[in-house]
Picture 1: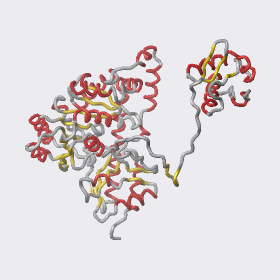
Picture 2 (picture 1 turned 30 degrees about the vertical axis):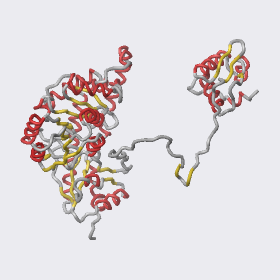
Picture 3 (picture 1 turned 60 degrees about the vertical axis):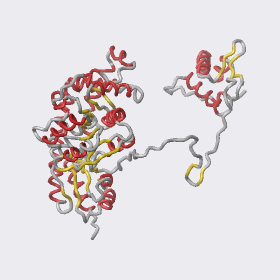
Picture 4 (picture 1 turned 90 degrees about the vertical axis):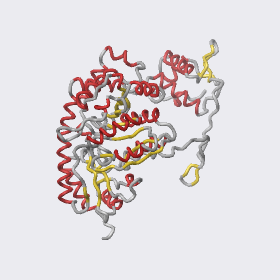
Length: 490
């Protein structure tokens, strides 16, 4: 008989039940080949004495092993390792240097346009793309709402599969919020909850865009949107972006020659330049959509963080969701880790998206959605937005002052009316890549802006996100920024 007492260690202080410890030990012995097929295992009384546990514990363990397919319990004969358990032999992974030589055993279709996501360097100070300060996130209120939700007796009824459109409570609250803050006329049938705006945009693109469809974007544009459209086979047409947003006149000229499927636009705070689409261009864009029957994908990007008293309302507030598809996210309001976004659109599109959601994600995070809905009901999110808005405006103003004081000879920018970053253009004599590397060695990250040069090759610019640093941190960051500047002609 094998030394089962040594082979099956029992930890009585473990949170794992003893019978499960026995199950895991036997499964491991079988996988390792130490117990081969048809091996008879000790009776429950004998093994119980060896392991110093009650025989009923052994009986329950054997029943669990049988349920998992590791053993067979044969009446009046005993317990045997299942005869169909394969013999498992460990194989050494062959290597050539540091690279595995074994190749994948099947064909895959590599993605052509979607680039891998690179984590941001772990520097102490960061001029990121424009990320909220997670230190301000209303975690206490969210935790309290979450606990309240899951402790209710009615909560268990919601743990089954639900609607693919998202929780009704959050959809209702978002409808009311968009009506009161954006002037958009809509109902719950116009609303779908997604895991962030990226997922919402992806589903919209999947339904709208077919190979060779023409999608119009800004020459400078949100690169993730570009990658999505291109991966789906769309032909991208680029139009210029100036201080009044995308140049709609160029779109008008193009529409005279070819049909377009959609245009993607962040009308409130264009990414990356932060400019706002002017009122006259908004009206012209809507008129073109009506005349040429194309969709306007309007990104709600940073709408809640506008520092002017009377922000221009979205295109969706005028169009009533006939041509406009309005996409947004609560990730910038809460924190990026909370993946909750929304799509507001015509019910026909929402219903198709709900069908698509069924094979992508099935449904969202019901408890989180319900908890966030409660934060809307209590006004907690609205208060958090107002508080963050005041803090972020102070940080924008401070960075504006610091850049003018210390960097006016090497960078050029316009103070943005909103958003979470300042679009900064470097003097032609600046080596931006070397400057970024030098700054990183001193504990400051800022992007070299290479991703923006795809359609504007000679551009030297980047986004300096200011919302995730305090006033003191911003000052320290700008001083490092200034010392890090490297010129091409020293």
